[in-house]
Length: 256
Ligand code: MF3
Ligand code: CO
Image (cartoon, rainbow, N blue to C red; front, side, top):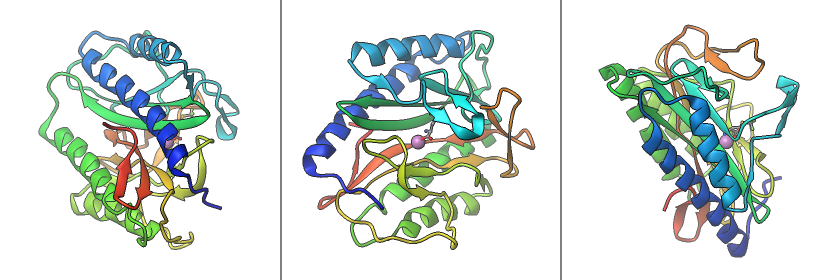
């Protein structure tokens, strides 16, 4: 069942979304050569606590990993796809790309968003990877209209990524979001005909999160049980927004 949110609930999700946005904006400003991913984690955790919010990821139980995620951020560098863990040993260098994914719970409602940022100078090919991934998210957002269907969102991402020669990660998907971090429906970044194709209605909120590889789409999880990487070692990009369906069209809760 897809839970629809009232206008008052959407206002709460908006506040959670704007907090997530302010954290990601701060992270963008801090990212440069010489900064460790744990430095970023520490600033982000402080911001969440100061806002009177709770981190959505820290303490979140993931059965596949067999435990609770230990950080407020996922920091996934280069060929890391998702769930990279902050570490003082992971020091950013020019030419890296880093995805920062974070979520918060505020007044009972969740916000969840991710960006991928270049460190110093990156290659032309990698710049295109970031651009195409972000564009695919924007195309998906524009499909978040009452009367459209879930596959309109999935297909918008898939077409743009595939037509630009990159590949879609199939092992992780977007999701509904509300009073839980993960609600129905799953939101794959490709049309999966095995799934249902529900019609979008006012009050539905989806966390849309394309994960795109420069090379092949397969992933594997490292021995730390969390970090997912591309099997072929190619770079991977990730952008995410929470988006509500409203009578005025798509409302991106995780940006101003
Ligand atoms: N944005 C991801 C998601 O929505 C991050 C979850 S990390 C976890 O699933 F540790 F909380 F699982
Ligand atoms: Co998410």
